[in-house]
Image (cartoon, rainbow, N blue to C red; front, side):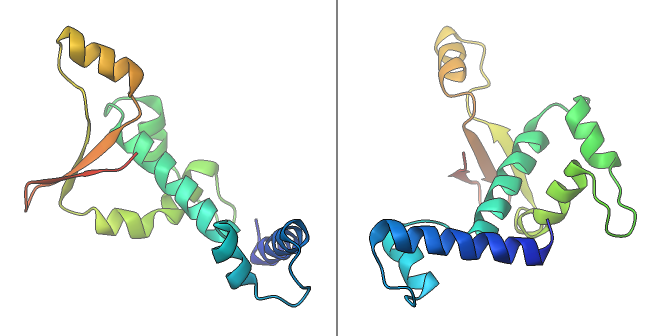
Length: 137
Protein backbone atom coordinates (compact mmCIF):
# COMPACT_ATOMS: atom_id res chain seq x y z
CA UNK A 1 0.00 0.00 0.00
CA UNK A 2 1.50 3.32 -1.01
CA UNK A 3 1.84 6.19 1.42
CA UNK A 4 -0.72 8.16 -0.60
CA UNK A 5 -3.28 5.39 -0.23
CA UNK A 6 -2.47 5.09 3.45
CA UNK A 7 -2.99 8.83 3.87
CA UNK A 8 -6.40 8.60 2.19
CA UNK A 9 -7.35 5.72 4.46
CA UNK A 10 -6.33 7.73 7.54
CA UNK A 11 -8.41 10.70 6.35
CA UNK A 12 -11.49 8.51 5.87
CA UNK A 13 -10.93 6.93 9.28
CA UNK A 14 -10.72 10.38 10.91
CA UNK A 15 -13.89 11.55 9.13
CA UNK A 16 -15.75 8.44 10.30
CA UNK A 17 -14.59 8.92 13.88
CA UNK A 18 -15.68 12.58 13.81
CA UNK A 19 -19.08 11.59 12.46
CA UNK A 20 -19.59 8.82 15.04
CA UNK A 21 -18.64 10.92 18.08
CA UNK A 22 -20.25 14.09 16.75
CA UNK A 23 -17.06 16.17 16.69
CA UNK A 24 -16.68 19.34 14.63
CA UNK A 25 -15.35 18.96 11.09
CA UNK A 26 -12.06 20.70 11.90
CA UNK A 27 -11.28 18.82 15.12
CA UNK A 28 -7.71 17.59 15.39
CA UNK A 29 -7.29 14.04 14.12
CA UNK A 30 -4.79 13.23 16.86
CA UNK A 31 -7.17 14.56 19.53
CA UNK A 32 -10.13 12.48 18.37
CA UNK A 33 -7.94 9.36 18.11
CA UNK A 34 -6.75 9.87 21.69
CA UNK A 35 -10.27 10.54 22.99
CA UNK A 36 -11.74 7.46 21.29
CA UNK A 37 -8.74 5.23 21.90
CA UNK A 38 -8.46 4.32 18.23
CA UNK A 39 -4.96 3.58 16.99
CA UNK A 40 -3.87 5.28 13.74
CA UNK A 41 -3.80 3.00 10.71
CA UNK A 42 -0.02 3.23 10.21
CA UNK A 43 0.68 2.18 13.79
CA UNK A 44 -1.90 -0.61 13.66
CA UNK A 45 -0.33 -2.05 10.50
CA UNK A 46 3.13 -1.99 12.10
CA UNK A 47 1.75 -3.61 15.27
CA UNK A 48 0.11 -6.43 13.31
CA UNK A 49 3.26 -7.00 11.27
CA UNK A 50 5.40 -7.18 14.42
CA UNK A 51 3.04 -9.64 16.09
CA UNK A 52 3.01 -11.88 13.03
CA UNK A 53 6.81 -11.62 12.71
CA UNK A 54 7.23 -12.76 16.32
CA UNK A 55 4.70 -15.56 15.87
CA UNK A 56 6.73 -16.88 12.94
CA UNK A 57 10.09 -16.43 14.72
CA UNK A 58 8.92 -18.60 17.65
CA UNK A 59 8.12 -21.53 15.36
CA UNK A 60 10.59 -24.41 14.94
CA UNK A 61 13.69 -23.70 12.86
CA UNK A 62 12.53 -26.08 10.11
CA UNK A 63 8.95 -24.75 9.91
CA UNK A 64 8.00 -23.69 6.38
CA UNK A 65 6.98 -20.14 7.36
CA UNK A 66 10.25 -19.55 9.17
CA UNK A 67 12.22 -20.81 6.17
CA UNK A 68 10.21 -18.62 3.80
CA UNK A 69 10.78 -15.60 6.03
CA UNK A 70 14.55 -16.15 5.86
CA UNK A 71 14.53 -16.67 2.08
CA UNK A 72 12.31 -13.74 1.04
CA UNK A 73 13.57 -10.98 -1.19
CA UNK A 74 12.34 -7.95 -3.04
CA UNK A 75 12.94 -6.54 -6.46
CA UNK A 76 12.98 -2.75 -6.32
CA UNK A 77 9.64 -1.79 -4.72
CA UNK A 78 7.88 -5.11 -5.30
CA UNK A 79 7.48 -6.97 -2.00
CA UNK A 80 6.24 -10.39 -1.15
CA UNK A 81 4.11 -10.47 2.04
CA UNK A 82 6.80 -12.05 4.24
CA UNK A 83 9.40 -9.52 3.10
CA UNK A 84 6.94 -6.76 4.00
CA UNK A 85 6.65 -8.31 7.49
CA UNK A 86 10.42 -8.36 7.83
CA UNK A 87 10.79 -4.74 6.68
CA UNK A 88 8.02 -3.48 8.98
CA UNK A 89 9.51 -5.24 12.00
CA UNK A 90 13.15 -4.14 11.57
CA UNK A 91 12.94 -1.78 14.53
CA UNK A 92 11.53 -4.55 16.73
CA UNK A 93 14.26 -6.93 15.58
CA UNK A 94 16.93 -4.41 16.63
CA UNK A 95 15.27 -3.91 20.02
CA UNK A 96 15.18 -7.68 20.63
CA UNK A 97 18.87 -8.16 19.86
CA UNK A 98 20.33 -10.30 22.64
CA UNK A 99 16.93 -11.64 23.72
CA UNK A 100 15.49 -15.13 23.38
CA UNK A 101 11.90 -15.71 22.30
CA UNK A 102 10.16 -18.62 23.96
CA UNK A 103 6.70 -20.00 24.45
CA UNK A 104 5.38 -20.00 27.98
CA UNK A 105 4.20 -23.56 28.59
CA UNK A 106 6.74 -25.94 27.10
CA UNK A 107 6.69 -28.69 29.76
CA UNK A 108 5.36 -32.19 29.35
CA UNK A 109 3.16 -32.24 32.44
CA UNK A 110 -0.62 -32.48 32.20
CA UNK A 111 -1.06 -28.94 33.54
CA UNK A 112 1.46 -27.53 31.07
CA UNK A 113 -0.35 -29.24 28.17
CA UNK A 114 -3.69 -27.87 29.35
CA UNK A 115 -2.33 -24.34 29.69
CA UNK A 116 -0.58 -24.56 26.32
CA UNK A 117 -3.87 -25.60 24.72
CA UNK A 118 -5.72 -22.76 26.38
CA UNK A 119 -3.08 -20.01 26.18
CA UNK A 120 -0.89 -21.29 23.36
CA UNK A 121 -0.47 -17.84 21.84
CA UNK A 122 1.24 -16.38 24.88
CA UNK A 123 4.80 -15.47 24.09
CA UNK A 124 7.58 -14.36 26.40
CA UNK A 125 10.85 -12.61 25.69
CA UNK A 126 13.74 -13.53 27.94
CA UNK A 127 16.49 -10.92 28.12
CA UNK A 128 19.66 -12.99 28.37
CA UNK A 129 21.68 -10.10 29.80
CA UNK A 130 19.30 -9.30 32.68
CA UNK A 131 17.43 -12.59 33.08
CA UNK A 132 14.05 -10.83 32.98
CA UNK A 133 10.86 -11.97 31.26
CA UNK A 134 8.47 -9.77 29.35
CA UNK A 135 5.01 -11.03 28.37
CA UNK A 136 4.36 -10.13 24.78
CA UNK A 137 1.28 -11.75 23.30
